[in-house]
Amino acid sequence: MIKVSNLSKQYVERAAIDNISFEVESGEIVGFLGPNGAGKTTTLRMLTGYIPPTSGNASIGGHDVFSESIKARQKIGYMPENVPLYDDMRVREYLRFRAELKGLRGQEARQGVSEAIDLCGLKQIRRQMISSLSKGYRQRVGLADALVNNPELLILDEPTNGLDPNQIRRFRELIKQLGIRHTILISTHILSEVEMTCNRVIILNEGKIIANDKPKDLSRELRSANTISIEVKIPTETAQNLINAIPGIKKVTKEHQVEEWSHLTIRTEPGNDVRESIVHLANAQGWPLREIRTQYATLEDAFVEITQANTSNS
Ligand SMILES: Nc1ncnc2c1ncn2[C@@H]1O[C@H](COP(=O)(O)OP(=O)(O)OP(=O)(O)O)[C@@H](O)[C@H]1O
Ligand SMILES: [Mg+2]
Image (cartoon, rainbow, N blue to C red; front, side):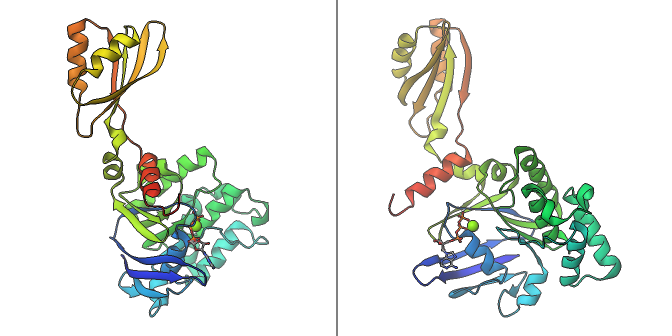
């Protein structure tokens, strides 16, 4: 659905995008991540034909975004970073106007608008002036705009920016639902959202792609995956000494003590699962053990580690 080859964007003083290539298959939901200034918006604006690349090319559904920009754009619903809306229009009127701009007429336009209103939960406010909407509702109108012509591909640039936690959760459900019928490329800083909705993550840093993988595979590789928490009912020092003697253990740290229960964090060498040895030890010593848990790295851990390792001056 999306094919990007050797795409670069040079602004006067710097390269914003430096020779990136990636593909997005039909039906995928791909998270497009990266620190501030990484070049996400720049890439999405090139894909949607708003700015020209300095070199390289990009196509949507086989249509080059520049030489066949009209055909490429017909396939895209784009929600830009700062949704520009007409303040002096009412919600439904605005969406109708946008549908017509996108070439829909009559019944087709009415249906597009009414479906987008339903999907984005705008029914109650469809007659309200856009100038009177809260930030979250403006975002929803922006999304409804992207959806109004039922495009194959949705390109969403930080769509949850400014939404409250309830709305973010609702939005996540909406993305999952939309993912059944649409291909989605979504840029966001809310990584829990990506973890729950995206099949794949592309991480951009300083204009280059530094990761392109499933969210699970990105976090699995991290060192923090080799961290175990336990809670045992014995003095911390005794537990620390004996656990430290198990092969493959790097460090045993006391987290806290609640009454007689010691809560310890155990770091191990990569690839070493010591949970069984710990249970054996507890049994042999007769320690009451009420919790043993592997701490998995989150996508946020992966993001921080990967972007920091690939940043030139920090
Ligand atoms: N019109 C422009 N002229 C010059 N430089 C620009 C222009 N637009 C963006 N840049 C620069 O290009 C780089 C990438 O910006 P971009 O907006 O694509 O980042 P981003 O990944 O979307 O960041 P954020 O997470 O903050 O939205 C930044 O260094 C930015 O300052
Ligand atoms: Mg941006």
